[in-house]
Image 1: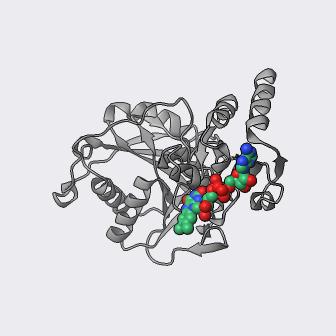
Image 2: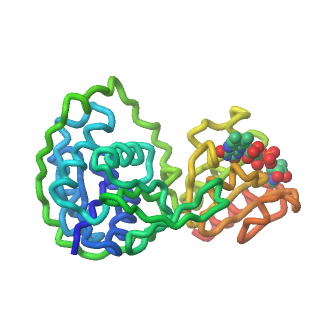
Image 3: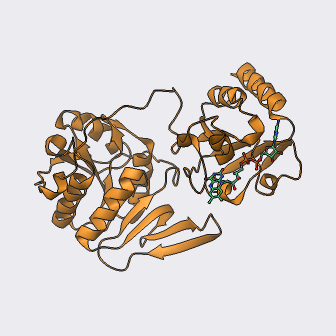
Length: 316
Ligand code: FAD
């Protein structure tokens, strides 16, 4: 069975959930091999984690030549590994960095690239949701090694024991790939909430919050969710752009999406309509968001959300 390379998404060795989702998808396509680009000292810990999700091999690329630069050296590392292993496919998380790595890799390998897949089946045949969700596209790479970036929450991670054999892989990074250097980097302030694009639950607020996001944040904290927002809320200066969901913001696909005080404009839907269960709280029963929801509450969010938060807290 051919190998399927999965680029491990991690922060300082802490493996992010999309990696486990990609390993689960990789099992449908061949034999999952995880690729860790990071400090060699963290490799055994990372290998333990990914082998529990079916990684048969874990390629370790020590990042001493790579860290401190932007993404070009990572693409070179994957190129060299792909040339050595001739994988059946390469799966990369659909983060901003992942998509840049994938694009560079596709040029280097002269291979077809599919981005933002929401499903990948044997073939590999991918499903994408495009043009603000108006079309579902089924696609297949027909030249070279399929390189596919997959959106978070596109598969439920399934545990299954892999061999997890660690193999160190030496890379040679060109001077051209080191042309852009990181001068400083500032870690995001820890909020204690899950990362928006990876969260299983997202509670979003729109213009209907009137600028008071406290009920939205309190509900999100009570149910372990991330906080999102509509562009109207962002443009009003109530919440930073990093929280915006939609065509010009982030795309989320959680198990549960709760839209509060959001009308449901097409540009907002583009970022959330693949969510598994959608709930809306809106005081206007004619609001377009209700066309999309599994459950709708007609009411004032400033009353409904605190009541819901109290109820959830009581039941904990
Ligand atoms: P509104 O449309 O004003 O809706 C507010 C809703 O809150 C109403 O339905 C109202 O009934 C309800 N409400 C009011 N008070 C309460 C209350 N107390 N309790 C409960 N409900 C209440 N938008 C995005 O979100 N994301 C994008 O990425 C995005 N990109 C865009 C790109 C382009 C090129 C363009 C043209 C637009 C884009 N937009 C985007 C903007 C989009 O068209 C809408 O204007 C925006 O989504 C509206 O935000 P909203 O639903 O919060 O506000």
